[in-house]
Image 1 (tube, rainbow, N blue to C red):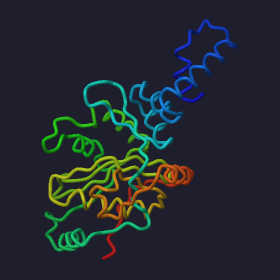
Image 2 (cartoon, rainbow, N blue to C red; image 1 turned 120 degrees about the vertical axis):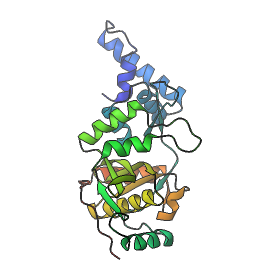
Image 3 (tube, one colour; image 1 turned 90 degrees about the vertical axis):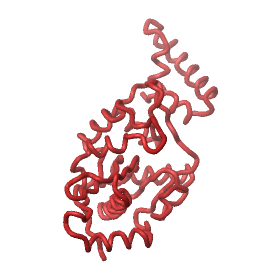
Length: 260
């Protein structure tokens, strides 16, 4: 039974006869679909009625949507399935001149000042760093409830982090969700200039080396354009998503090497 059917089923009293219950389920299902503006939106509404959990997160990503916990204290989830997705081609990403210059200069620095990149070495601290409000913002979508679920997803090998260290101190990085050949970048942070950019570039190298098929980065018109982010329409994204999830790929803990 799908999550939408389960949500509809919960509305109907248990003492209703089986044949009548089936009829009422179909009526509620159809009505909800029409009122909410289509089956996709009806399913998203159904997901929003469940509390945040690893199961709900995974189900959402499998259908191509992504959750944003309510920042005002409500337990309701906001699910997004935009018409346009930002995609960074796994086999055709770019590196800007500024980042190339930064990496070359970094290789010449003393060991204590050079960036060191690690994978899944400290997921918890990376997650917490990403969750801290930035600039004038006082709230974040990475709520305590989301952090708890993300830690569970990390423990079962679904959520991963890429981290940049300087003199042993975590100074940049980010985390995301990997489901077979599909990877969704969720958040980045840095406390030292370029530390986040360096971590993200290593992530791109890693996704290519591991054989990933689809990498969602969020808004293609953001700072991700420097890495070659492009726009992808919903139907093409869904087709690519199915192929990526069907590809047996493992997010390894191996840190890629720079080729220059």
